[in-house]
Amino acid sequence: MTAAQKLRVLIADDELLARQRLEDLLAKKKEVDLIGMAVNGQEAVEAIRSLAPDLVFLDVQMPGLTGLEVVREIGPEKMPATIFVTAYDQYALKAFEVAALDYLLKPFEDERFEQTFSRAVKTLELRKMGEMAGQLVTLLQGREGIADAPVSNSAYLERIAVEMRGQMQIVPVARIDYITASGPYAELHVGEDTHLIRERMQTLEERLDPTVFFRIHRSAIVRLDRIESLLHGVGGDYAVRLKDGRRLKVSRSRREELEQRLGLTL
Image (cartoon, rainbow, N blue to C red):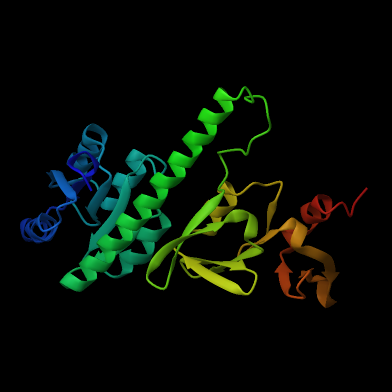
């Protein structure tokens, strides 16, 4: 990385020793520019808005506003990449509900920090690549006079970054057959492969094209063209059978809309 490409990092933690620990570890990173520190939640909000960091190490428990409240104040869609730092393990799951990249549980070892930091850098690089690809498409459309040609709706996900064998890889959304919930994670089912990501089903549902995907159950989202048939079981239970033979449960509250989406009602 050149100086112009340095990763702009903000530390927000009310504990002096915790701030110094992160500062010492980040000082070893030539690619990092530590642009500021905040000692409470309100300072964190102001620093994020004024300094626009690429990455924030955000303590969960702080005076004024907690780390989670900082995210809500800024807005999850406007937050920079976030790594929560906490001494309380029960906050770890909460952290992922607001789409944190990862978390560090105090006291953490150097190795754990390195893993978390490396994952954050790779994710940010993939995000940047996606943004650049979108900019190139826009540029080409304008240059070649095809601005009126149909293009994908950028409001919906087209690719998802997943960790595979220690590396971040891109999974095109077009290849996903269905998605299932697994605690605070989601499992992307792509053919014979399954990829685990830290994301809420609600967030995925909102960011996937509703003309292509449908949430058939609180724990399952299915690509509509992968559905072979709708099954009516004993006791009023419903399920879908996919083209690969797999069956997934359909909640009763979603059955009627699913039938409409599949063209099974007049």
